[in-house]
Length: 96
Image (tube, rainbow, N blue to C red; front, side, top):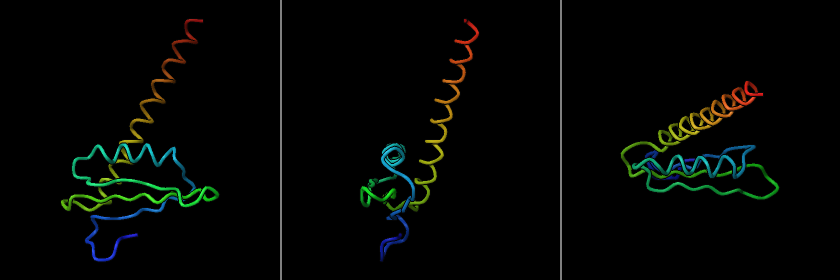
């Protein structure tokens, strides 16, 4: 959902079947971008598993770019955690 009168630097993304787990993690990753002026999310209603995720950039790039980068960075962090966990489990099993 793009706000009227904007050129794509202020966009609200609607993410279905998601909750605070993705919302807060993604917000953290997106806010690390210095070109992002505002990033926040809200759960529409407790009985709905849908979040509204809003990004506003400083005007230098469209909001979809930090959204994509945030998702990719978050996937990278999750993959690193998974790899570290699996490596630790393999080492633990080898010691037993």
